[in-house]
Each structure stands twice: as structure tokens, then as C-alpha cells.
Amino acid sequence: MNFLRLLLMAIVIVGSCFLTVTYSDHHTPTNATAFEDLYMHLMPAPMLSSQEHHGAEDTAAADDHGHEHPAEGAGHDTKHYVFAQSLGFLPSLMDGAPDIDGTQLVLTNLQVFQIASILLIVLAFSGVPGYLRTGRGDGMTRVLTGWILWIRDEMVVPNLGADDGRRFLPFFCSIFFFIAFMNLMGLVPGSVTPTTNIFVTLALALITFFSMIGLGMKAQGPVAFWKNLVPHVPAWMWPMMFLIEVVGLVIKPFALMIRLFANMTGGHMVVLSFMGLIFFFAGTDLSPMAWGVSVPAVGFGVFIMIIEGFVALLQAYIFTQLSCLFVGACLHPDH
Image (cartoon, rainbow, N blue to C red; front, side, top):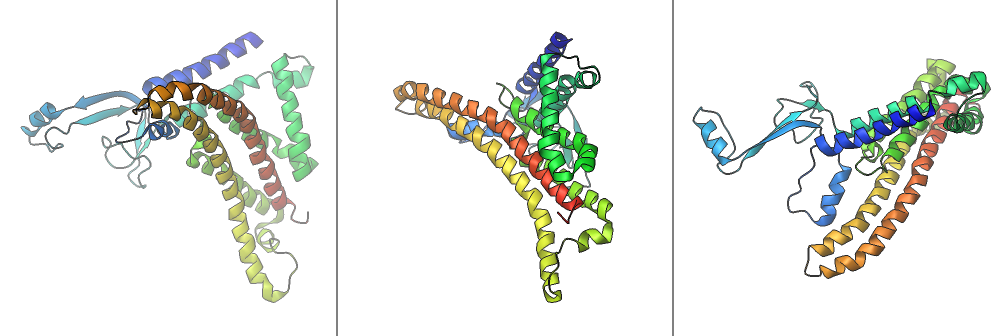
């Protein structure tokens, strides 16, 4: 069973990387430096089923039928997306998709690895329930069970209390492992890291924000929640303190969003900067220096990748720990 689970997890990882490398619309830079070329890999790319290029001859033929096309010699690409849903009632969600009328929701390589992370979580934790019931399980199951117990005893229960902690443990475990698996998958060659996109971290932060508001109002009552935001202060200070506390409710998840995004993006940019030195010197008159800088550049890149493995877990811990703290403060304002 353990071998089969590991095999399925490997298939998910390799399959996700294969789909991304094969079908994602790789960014084609114009007048870009070597560093800009590499940094474009941090940007989301839509998944294409096929792409056709039409040159000047195609344009001239189309003009005979009365259709408008780019100027002669310009050419254009017709992109067929794996998934594209028109959303004409919303602002544009994806730039660079001229073949879809109106606005559109397009499947990108980020979503591929988000789905892959969920599949990995399901496969990895499939043996945990049986281990908790019977006490029998393989090494992976025992390790993952230890992580869950650590999250419960060191993060959730101390911030939410024993009763609320056990109720919301699955929620916070889901946040922790979802972020951790996305971060760790981003270290695999040919992959992308969804948490390097600020819209992904924004969605995660919004989950924490609405959990703070919703669970707080449910626990205290709709009126009491907003009233208890302000401690006992003189009446003339109450409006100002209320405004400060409301702003604080927004700033807390905003800090979660920026911290996760900046740390994951920064680590990737450092690695890409070292790699970019090789391509930078190779494209100049100092091309022999590319061989000289390649050894230290690769060495530093590997060193940063090792650190990123630690940072991937650290950022999942920080995000979950602060989420527990913020939600716990809304559930128990007296503490």
C-alpha cells in the first residue's frame, strides 16, 4: 500500500510538471534581458491545447473576405485554451487572450499545481485515519500523524482552546498542508509555485479574514462582536479606537498575504538571479566569463534551493500560526 501511494504521488508530481512544460503558454519576451527572461517564469501562463501562427500571407487572404486583421507582415497567433470561460460581466481576469471575446477565466499552470497539491494531500494522508484507529501504519503515515498532532497541540489548541481547537483542527490542517505542498512542489524542476502569485496568497488571506469575521460573529453575536473590538476606554475615544480596530482586522490578513507572497517570490528571484548571471555574460563580449561564473552561480543556486525547502515549511507554519492567533482572538476577545 505504501509503495502504491508513493507511486501515485510520483505520477501526480511528474504529470503536473509534464503538463506545465508541454502545454503552458510560455512567455515570449521582447527586448528583454537575460534576467527578465528568467523572471517571466514567475508569472502565470495559460494552458494551451494548441497554438497557430498566421503570417502576412494569411492576413492578405483574409482581407479578401472583408475581415479586419493586423497590418501586413505583422502576423498573429490563434490560441486554443484548455479551459476558457467567458465572464463578460467582470473586468478582465487574464491579459493576453485576444482570441476570446469579452472577459474570460483561463486555466493556468498555477491551477494545475494547486489541483496537484490537493491530490497529493489526499494520497499522502489516506492512511492516517486507519492508523489513528488501529495503530498500524507505514513510516509516512506515522510522520504525517505526528505533524497533525503537533499542529493541534502547538498551534490550534493554545490559540483557540481545547473545544474550539478540536472543532477547527481540520480547517487549519488544510491551510497548513495546502500551503506546504504548494511551496514544496515549486522546488521540483519544471514546476511552478502558486504562492509566488499574489492573487493566490490573496485568496488564502481572504479565507482567514472571513473566518475571523464569520466565526467571531457566530461565537459572540453579530452586535457583540463589533462592540467587543474596542476595550474599555473613555467615551470620547471610542469612535477613534473602533476605526483603528476595524482597520486592524483588514491589516492582519493583508500582512499574511504579503509575507507569504514576498518570501516565496524573493527566494525564487535569488535563484534565478544566480542563474541569470550565466546567460547574461554568455550574451556579451565577455562570454568566456560565463564559464567562470557558472560554478559559483550553480553552487549558490543549489544552496538557496536547500534553504527554500526550509522556508517552504516555515512560511506554511507562520501563515497557519498567525491565522490561529487571529481567529482565536475573534472567538475569545477576553483573552
